Image (cartoon, rainbow, N blue to C red; front, side, top):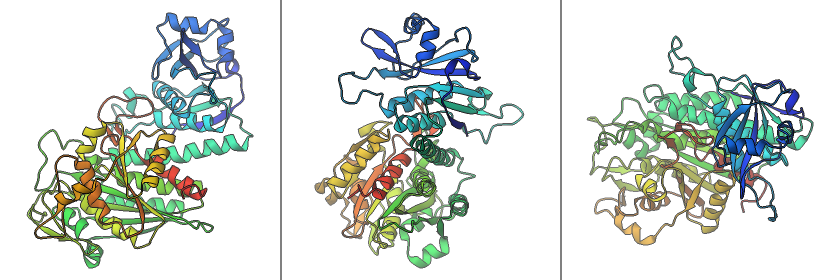
Length: 511
């Protein structure tokens, strides 16, 4: 993990491999952003013109390298695009946190193999410190556990991640700046932990192995953990989790991970879908649709990371994470289309499609979470391809049984830089899940499938409990090239949203 420091040193005299500066897209060409005044002065105030000559415009994600001026101890300057220059006439004149986060991520990734870089990006307060720090740590991420040490021991073309980043303009003795940096480290490290889990191959991360990871983290951070194995699940009547996991040689698990604060009077429950591999079961996925299905446990990974982050931050709120873990495989013992499962809640479900399995494991976990009567439940799942069709690959959908809570979750997601969109739960779609042989079927109308799944989950939320559902099927796993601070592969989607909801609850702002 890249080490972060706050520094009041001047850029020219700092020993580093590179100086990172920001450049914005102005109305008349690129504009050098605040924080880089000393660098611009060394170019006789003509740095913007030099960058423009080199083809830079200040567009988001753009990166330009040029030799450092004479007298600098760092050999190169790395100019990274911040997007549009803020409107000087607006009340908020600074660069928004997400622009800084993305720029820092782009630069950190480009500087793989470097020992130290100085980030002279705009810092106008602790919020900017946190955003830049977060961007650096998330952008520098690499997953290289399975690389052959004799050939390519590290990711990024054989280059190790950036070793150290000094945030110029950050005040090392300022409590707010130090606090913002500490928060960035805790959240980013746990988010990267979730990425590691998502990227891990399913032959090494089955339900039992995932549960062991949770147990290890609980021991490290003083959390309570309870793991229900197949015997306990059978005794407890968790028909959904058992039904999904019944076709695999790797037995399912339900993990309860609890963080409690002695002064907390609010309780949040996070529930995560943890299908460590999804073949579709008897309703087998066609070729081309199962190669990345190790990522179907991204919801559980997000919940896991968020609970640990809440503990590391010492938030004054009780947070319980429920990880519904199973492997969905076809075999003689697998659930068949047409089977009826009796869920933990006592309701029966007719399984019409075994590839609609995530809602089955979540249903049991949601009902288990409801028994503790938390103030709110938020579930996270790579649940439906329909949500990807609706919102694309970078935005997750938010559904809820309370409009105000849905808005709160959406705003929290946007605040931390996770694109989200509020989605409805149309009552007329519930009729499509009526079954002649059971209380409900696990499939309904094809059109609006993501909303149908949300309506199914709502059936298993305890009466009177506020609940939201995040369908992260799109942004959970990036199959394209890296962008901003987002790598290829597991992204850690929803971790920051959950952490922010815990912070809002601790501050008494969640209602």
